[in-house]
Image (cartoon, rainbow, N blue to C red; front, side, top):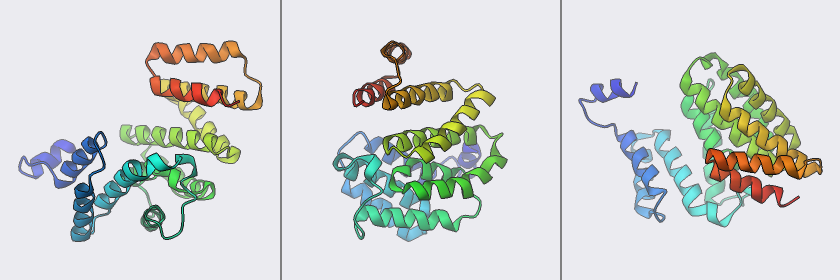
Amino acid sequence: MEEYEFLYNGGKVDSKREFATRVSRSFKKNFDPELVADLKFQYIETHDFFFYSLYAQYYLIKKHFKASSLSTMGDVAEGSEVYLIRLNIERYLESIYTWGRFELTLFANCLFLFSDEYIRFQYREAIVHMRQFVDSSNYSTDLLKFLINGTQLSFDRNCMENFAIFMKELKKVAKIYADTKARLVVKIFETLHKCRKGEQSQKDLTALKQTLQFLGENTWLTYVSEVSGQF
């Protein structure tokens, strides 16, 4: 599809891709008010929610993330910018009867915005119906990302109802598709769940940390070390 779009546009890079690249690079820099203004302008001019989604994700990570825990960002003050972003994303998602890759990715990336009840509702009403695209490699990748984000967020919030839902689906992916990443994440949260209940042996926890270190999964290693140290 990317090659087709490139040829269709006469060898020119689509404006959406240009802005997506610009946003991606800007995550490594300080907050850029000019980029925010440009994204809002593009959204107003084109009425394309793609530009608003870029603005929302950029603003949340660069402007708000450092001041708040992602696990508690669903409890924001009414009328705040974060509240308005959540409201606008909800309105957009609820206007789409059958979600595609864009909607799934947007929801997965902004999952921390929503209440546990809303996450369950959208999972049952929208995500499950997307299984018609299960043969798509892009869908499989995006679904796995959604399941991992949902598992971690549910665990951090100690929402056992959602945690059980996401873990069940992750285990299915790990078994049916022999997905190594899914297996790894399942093992991580099985171990942390046992730590929370006081049932995890120090030997197995150490083995998990050593495995993560060997695989170069430094982000997960840090997460496991920090979370297990709380119990």
